[in-house]
Amino acid sequence: MVASAIFILDSKGKTLISRIFRGDVDADIAGDFCARVIDVDDESGLKPVFRVDSKQRTYAYVKYSNLYVVGVTMRNSNAAMLLEFLNKLVGVFKEYFKEVQEESIRDNFVIIYELLDEMMDFGFPQVSESKVLQQASRVPTPTKPAFVLEPLQYITQDYHVLEVPRPPVAVTNAVSWRSEGIKHSRNEVFLDVIEKVNIVISGNGSTLRSEILGSLMVKSLLSGMPDLKLGLNDRLQLSEAGKNRREKSVDLEDIKFHQCVRLSKFESDRTISFIPPDGEFELMSYRLNMQVRPLVWVDAVIELKATRVEYLVKVRSQLKPRCVANNVQIRLPVQLDADTPSFKCSSGKYKYVPAKDELVWTIKQLKAGRELVMRGRFNLPSIGENQERDNATKRPITVSFEVPYFAVSGLQVRFLKVMEKSGYRALPWVRYITQAGDYQIRIV
Image (cartoon, rainbow, N blue to C red; front, side):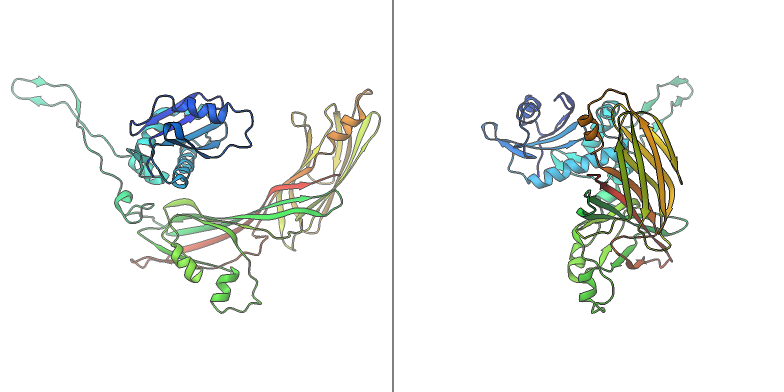
């Protein structure tokens, strides 16, 4: 893959960052892109990669927040690799600036140009790992102090010695995401199995959509060059290992790995073998299309009257025994002209958010099998369109929560082994967390 230029545009097509690597593109590349993508009325036919035959030019772009990150190539390059580089570039910006928006791009344009020069050399991708880039940016430029020449007492000005910085060890090493010589006083590795439940429930209680999005997040605090092996209760892995099929297993779908994972090893025996980067990273993500019983159930009766609207809301935990849902938030739709809320909760607190036309019921902990009730009312003006008010309460109820020590899919870590040539003992820690993703309960 050879990129001729990378540039970043705002939502109106104004250029915020422009970096031309090979000098083989015209100055109108941003305007040409705007005319074909940003200024079009019908966006249904837009594609992330398109070619302008008249100019022998190919564009690839990623839209993130209110920005367009665009790559241009004048050669028959690998379009998928160019798109992957643009996504990596956005990921690096997120690591550095936390929020990738127009304001953060303007505030950090100097370091963005430096990152582009480190990540791409004459159009060829070089380094895309944020930790390696941070290591490269710490190369010091030594300053020689003024010297005195005896006996004439000549004093020269301070000057800087131009030192050609050596590339990070990780760039020239076979393991490009980890540098050598890493040391930790306490060797530990933390593995979080985080699963988000996306579910949509109709007004009659049937499930319209149900899926689980999972990720394995690793925080590695290991010295040297450790080699880790991770085993899951994946159905294919248990079958090939000759395990009893009665042992609970899961079918993983749409698996994506960090680049440190040895894919050949996974394809042969379904073992996840890898040398981890130092610090935090996402080892793996997956998706499961499976019917999930709603973990938190909400019943809401909203009765609209002439001058008020009354609410009766019941929330019930359908978790397994000894499981607890923490920080439960239930967001209920409210009419546009409602005012003067008056509610009572058997547990938790309520808050009216007029900016979003919703009532938020917050419960710190909801134990398994427990049912809580909230009832109350809003006042309404005496004059109003009933149809408009009815539509306001047809918006779905959204729920958010977190259940620690629980994986809703049944995924389990069977083993996590750490091997390093020095032979030190490492402490592996595993934690399971289930969260509400797009969790909606429709009223009608």
